Image 1 (tube, helix red, strand yellow):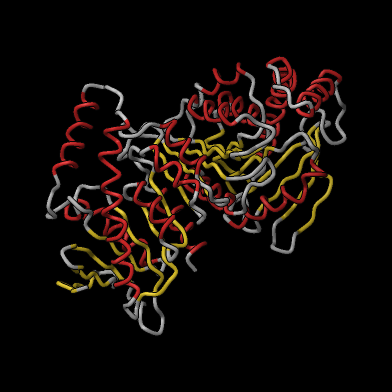
Image 2 (cartoon, each protein chain N blue to C red):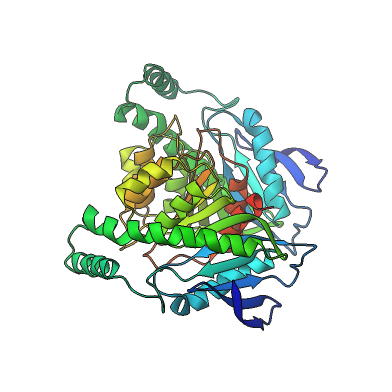
Length: 246
Length: 246
């Protein structure tokens, strides 16, 4: 992991951009984090829109978390931002757009093509980032995962024992295969659902919530579309992490 | 309204029992409430188990609310506690028990008989209690309603303009007629659902949430049965009232 830039935000949060091999990322640490008082870490998942586009929302979440004593980090997803595209994913995105514009049902084939290769690529990258981040003296455990493409969060929750709790946003199509993986999740979950999400099937999201194998799971459903998540939702998610990452 | 007893709890909360005609009730006010600083009020709905049986849970909610600056009050439901039973309600309760013990579906007739007369009787009583409570100098508006039999909460939210926000527990069977009333609710709602509630149909609860006419509604679903509502749920409900009753 190479730090490529560093700045201190006005609230004392240290923001450092880094690269991990070819993957760009950002790490935010609260002013209080040090080798003698390492901060618990929250991995901030993000949609495949690119870090630069998502930066304002990510930094807002990072500041909120830092105020609660948490470090946060995010990495660019495969095929997003300046990272090389791959043709199959581009094709799947185009197919999805076409289906949605035509108000056609989104087929399992499209959902699988859009999601499964992304999960396969992204999860080992998150794990490599976790290795690097946890080697920093000012970062400690436990680790949470928040947001982003829900299928990536599900796979991470299953395969990565260092993740202790997750906030998942039921805001993207989920391949059928991921429902089976969801049954294997045993960490505490806080699941957000936008009741009228145009990019997501509500019943499928409720079925997914039902499928999660964990005993401690909470669903927070709010009104509005995909991008209409209310402000106060962030407070509830922060309290969830405060309960589980201390 | 006649106060029949008064005690100061160890956290400074003033607990007063009262009668309103033949209806017993309890009022809790925070130590800070006064004529010059009247406290907003939360009406605490309760299941038809009787105030005495529910007292430990009610007083815990009252103390929690008082710490946030809210007065709380509750009244005995018609047919509960020491109030006279009425035969039709007793019959409906017996029919419900029989159906549930036999794992039979609970018919619309049973749900209607159990609920609609209770709503008809209870709502005007709550309104009379509200008249009396709001005439006290240490109680001000706005007013919230929390918990209890959800159909009573729905009717109150529709007919009582002094109620500004409600926390509803989707934990009892809801007559079909109430779904139509739910569409007329326009105040902010915070709806709790126990995912595996044995005394409630999950899909019906989700349909009810969908039916509410209000634009600001949130569903919080947690694991467990009817009585397994997790502790942290109270914090989220308190924050909802803090947002809407100040």
